[in-house]
Image 1 (cartoon, rainbow, N blue to C red):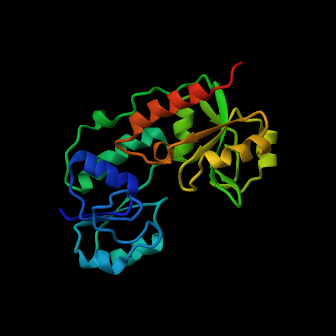
Image 2: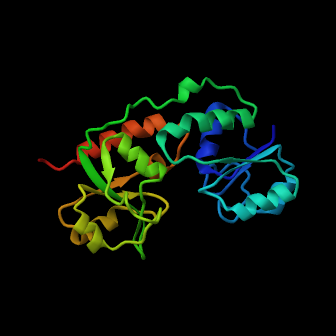
Length: 235
């Protein structure tokens, strides 16, 4: 099959499965592959010209209007959507079926049981200027919950609320999580968090482990748990 993936985590998963991908986005971290724009601004004409058997898109990563335009052009679009860890296995099974690949669903089931001990709390920042965080109905929040870390923004009305560091400080999280994407948080931002949210521990994370679901999920859970437990302040 000729497959175009407009979802970085799907591209990674398909390649892990040994499924060839005809084209992907520039955010898929595959410099040797054909690129057809970005996740939010795909080159629709280039995609149609490839005559793909299926284009994989995601409700969170991609725009509805681009999916509609591809469908109107006669392109078959397969849409994924994952907001919790338990949703990964059925979504991978659906994806495998859509691309003509056979998998054993049990092979991609989450290996870590839910940690109900809630040993820490966190705010996950995804943007700066303005500061933005993630609420509970997100895959990233579900990943943290799986390893026993509560999202203190869980009750936000918005999925990605705008916040201030003063508000974060009032919530008294154990951690302020700084993923490497979508905003490229790095060591240079740590001092700002230390000053703005005293008492919280800033933790730099690989954003792919927090937001890319798929064949990465099990390893990501193990890495997240290890990083956060090491960063846990002494009681």
